[in-house]
Image 1 (cartoon, one colour):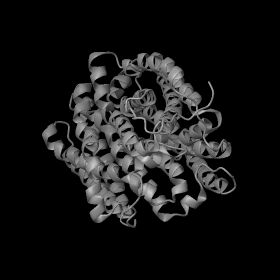
Image 2: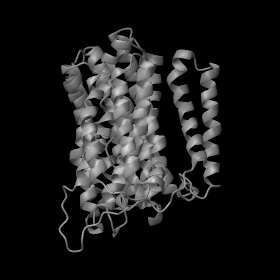
Image 3: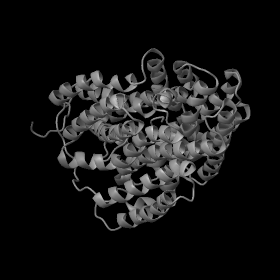
Image 4: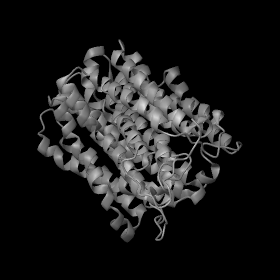
Length: 489
């Protein structure tokens, strides 16, 4: 098929339900759901394989880590080899890995399949957004891509509820098998209907990919295995040392390449560095807590997987409902102040939950903390993309957006690793009392991180200047390396 950029004829009405929109939205929704769909199945997976906390951490982290570190590289591959081609390859890889996850006979083969799923997701998500952007007239970018990003955000939010519903009525393997009919239906239609396009740049920073990937993998390995092996074990210490060496080497290498994954000019902009760090710190606390909360609801309080998923609904769904209305507040007090308020409420919500967690607590006593987390996420996710993009020049908006998404996934990965390690050190699965104690300590740790992040957010200058010509969704659509920044989770 010859290369083309799909554009509407001048004066022709644009249909929202275009093939490009529908096909990419379905694929992105499926990928977004898999961010958190597995969390409500973790107790069942633990019983099936007899694994400990470290195995469960890897099941979640393998997906989010590969998703995070490969996203910008996948966008670059799409620029070079064709976005439609790489999108289809990623979707096929995601579907095949889903089948592998469902059929995995051991926990470590499940982890491997989840890592391949994350790689496929990293190819689907940014390129799906680029395809929609190129198929959308410029005047319609903000509206169409705003709806598209909202669909992806809903996928992340409802993941625990969908997973809980599936595991309540079927074996846990079906949380992965449901991807097969969806993916197999989308693949041939997308191959026929989507047109090819390429980006203006075709160079891939292989050295940057290697340094960042190995450095992040090393620190996640050390955090997850520290309690089991011992924090002074050579493998654990080696992981921390490798991270301390490789990540600074990555920063240095970025200054010496013509096509860096993360241009040093961005790192030198204080507002950008602070705002993407806040993205990681927010997801660190929120999703690290959700990883443990769904197990607490089932293992300690005896909830069914569906009821556990619904118990998380205030923290997961409120951002979808409230976030679009945070613009009024940001215009009055500034986006940075809104972020600080959201992080402060997150700290309060996590601390409030830690005060009531017990082997026999009622959900009504936990509900205020869950609602605080939902409002906190609403305020934060409603503004973080605008603040990130408002802190960089226009020419860097694509890379800035993709970097924000990468930091969001890294925060999720590190939150699961660090809060999981805190839980394992302070409690464990021996009894309801030890689980509750470990969960309380982990919640306090998350609250402390959120509180420090709130103070950091106060250092941001007002970034959402009046007169910015496009909303976040429109900017992302016109960018080369794009991510789904602004999705709640």
